[in-house]
Structure formats: C-alpha cells, structure tokens
Amino acid sequence: MASVSQRVFSGVQPTGNLHLGNYLGAIKRFVELQNGFDCIYCVVDLHAITVWQDPVELKRSIREVAAAFLAAGVDGSKHIVFNQSQVPQHAELAWVLNCVARLGWLNRMTQFKEKAGKDRENASVGLYAYPNLMAADILVYRATHVPVGEDQKQHLELARDIAQKFNNDFAASIAANGLAEKFFPQPEPLIAGPATRVMSLRDGAKKMSKSDPSDASRINLTDDADQIAAKIRKAKTDPLPLPESVEELKARPEADNLVGIYAALSDGDAASVLNAFGGAQFSAFKQALVDLTVSKLGPINAEMKRLVADPGHIDRVLGDGAARAEAIAAETMTHVKDIVGFVRR
Image 1 (cartoon, rainbow, N blue to C red):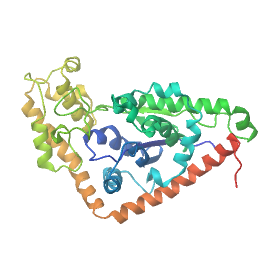
Image 2 (cartoon, rainbow, N blue to C red):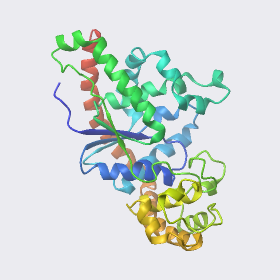
Image 3 (cartoon, one colour):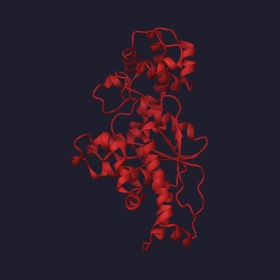
Image 4 (cartoon, rainbow, N blue to C red):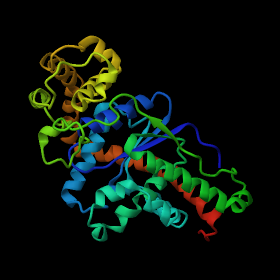
C-alpha cells in the first residue's frame, strides 16, 4: 500500500443547530486546511445515534451540517464531503479496533463520564465505545492530521495508541503482506488558534452548546443579523471596561470569551484586539463585535438557506463524496482483513 499524502480527516455531529463554536472551532478551520492538505470532512451520523435521535430530525440535521460545510467554503469537488453511514468501512474497522483497544483505555475517557452523568448504567454501549469508532474514522483513511479542540485531544491520543498497538500486535503479518512496518500512521493533532473553545454568552465558564436550554447562550449559524446583534448586546459581561492586557483576561471569563471570538473572526489574536479596544466600555466593543460577526456569518447564513432548500443537491454532494471516501476506506479494509487473517472473497 502506497504511503498516503498529508491527509486531514475531521467530522461534525448532526445533532441540532450548528453554532458559532462549531464554526470557529471546526468549520472555519476546515476551509483553511484545504490549501495545504487532502481533506476528508464527514458528517458523523453514526456518532449521533449514540443517544436517541428522531429519524426525521436526524436526516434534516445531516443535510444542514453538509450545507454549512459548503456555505463556509469547503470545496466538495476538490475535497471529500460525505456522511459517515454511507461508508460501511467505518463501522467495520471500528469492530476490529474494539478488539485491539483495551477496556482500561476507554475507562479513562472523560467525555463518557460527562455525557453519561450519574445514570451510566442506562447509557448506550455506543456512547461508551464511540472513541473506538472515532479512531476508525481517522485510521480507515490513514489520515496523517486531525484538527482538534481541547475536548478531543484525549480521543486523538486513544487513536494513536490503538494504531500503535495494531501495528505492534500484527507486525509479523504486516511484514508478510508486504506492507509498511507502521501500517497505520500516528495521526498528528492540528491545534486551532484563538477561540478554539467558544464559551456560552450567558456563562463564561460553560462551553457554547447546542444542548443549552437558553438560545441566548449561543449564536446559531441560522441566526439572522438582528438575532446575532441582540444576543451579543445581551451577552454577559462584568462592570469594568475591557482589560488592556492579555494577562488581565484570565480572571475575567466573559471578557476573555468575547475577545477570543473577535480575535478568531478577524484572524487576529487577543493582544491585537486589546490593542484596539483595551480600556473601552463593553457597549462600544460589543457593537464592533456585532458588525464583525454579521459580516462574517451573514453570507454563510444566506448560502446555507439556499442549499438547504435544495436537498437533492446536498444529497448528490454527499453521495459523490461517499463514493470517493469508500474507495480509500475499502482499500484500507482489504489490507486490514489480510493482516488480521480473515478469508476474503
């Protein structure tokens, strides 16, 4: 098997309205990475069903996430955009990796503990084991790089551990099949820049989330200019003017969040934002943030609406992407079956 080029894989779950945190933490980054990598971007619908989803709503959400990718500037003709369930090799490799990963590794995954809460006995097996599926998502394409936020670093480390154990466990078989010694690469993290962890507009200590009962806590990608303006103007702040140094931001979470959002949208950093607005009242800064946010999200919002109104087009993009993704994934799985010792047709 030929060595892969510099290949990025990443995915977004189709679970409710996409928001500013999804855009700054993932989708904006997807667009930027197209210039230096072969990119595979996935709507991870298999991950979504680790908790129950309404089938009608799930289908709508899959298309909406795909529309957001395209509206933001992901090129579905040069790169690959698809939904995970259309490529069966994801689930197929996940089972093999279930048999490679160790129970103790999964027991250390903090996200399961957070999502399952106190009622862990009633959580689905899928929710517990989905880090192994995430590893399969990456490794089935032998991806070399994965853009990650702070909350996904642990899962990428697990993928690296699984890849290494597979390579070690089957080293003799890998060699016997004439394959590279390290069949699965060690995927490297691509850490995003400012505002990688966008927080709630109502509570600077909580991550911006689709599941927050308050719609005012987040800016949805489907929000119009008036809704964006109202949410930013009502965003929680403290009574002091904006700080004049980055060091002062650390003790002021709401200010830190809004400055981080401005920095990410303007492709700057916190220091440059404070150089322009430090010492100003929040009212002036919020108006500048409104203007910037509307200018960046307005065109995406309009294009998303246009695309969502044409589900047939979205389905064709997803289908074409799935066919190209499966060509890569099927080759990987053919080799995996030979390595493990399965009898193939």
